[in-house]
Amino acid sequence: MTNERLYLGVDGGGTRCRVRIATESGTILGEAVRGGANTRLGMDHIFGEITAAAKQALKEANLDESRIGDLHAGLGLAGLPLERERNLIAAYPHPFASICFATDAYTACLGAHDGANGAILIVGTGTCGQAIIDDKQLAVAGWGFEISDIGSGARIGRAAIETALLAHEGLANQTDLTRDIMAKFENNPENIVAFAETAKPGDYGTYCPMVFDADAAGDATATTIIGHAVKANLQILRKLVAFGADHLTLMGGLCDQMAMRMPEDIQNLLVPAKNDAMHGAILMAKQHERTAA
Image (cartoon, rainbow, N blue to C red; front, top):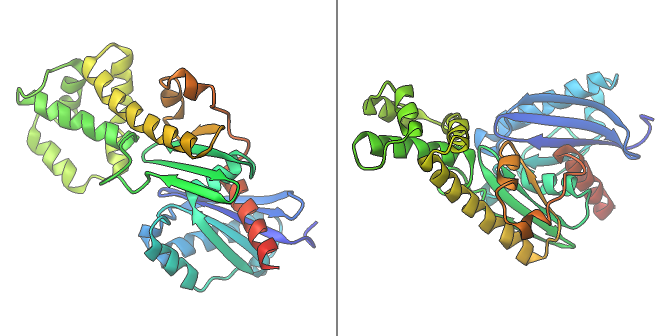
């Protein structure tokens, strides 16, 4: 079995990096999980995590660490929409037999539709849409919390905090949601300022479940906030459909919440993922090797 060509599929997100080693015929030999591998964390960091995860997966596969040089790696990494990051990845010295790389959304889309035409919308702490149609691809959103990701959990959480602060000052209607959020900050706007000075997208995202709970209880503010997120995600999905995708897969922590709020024409196109992003990264590595041969 281990005489076959070996592939490493990497799903590198902002909070964790998952890897899988598989043979040419598709047999899974080992998997491992390490810390975040978003390219914004720096090349030394992400390659350190990927290399450590690969060695753990080799150990699980009962293969010596020296076999790391036999792995043909496909890297699906958060942060790769930026050309500067792609250039850094391409130039970085690595221990693998070969590497190819793309965004984590691209490899997730490959995996979700098992290499066939289709599109995905990842909606969790952030958002990103990706379609692959024959030799064409389209990426939508995913430019980060600060300027994009409008339908994400982080933006929902931030909108809830902003509205709570406005309501506290009499500039918006107070509801159970706004009062509950202000209570988290001891009803003190200064505590919100201190929070915002260092808060990451994931920190804002921790307030997202409160919004959905409030919406389920009929809170008008929560319903409005979620409505804005649904509209943003619907725009992405319609863009992917217009590009030619007739199969859509929602992925991420908010996928079920968003799916149930989509109009009928979009729901009719929704299909479950066939495989995960590590599978997609291995597919990409195999395609890369066939092209290079």
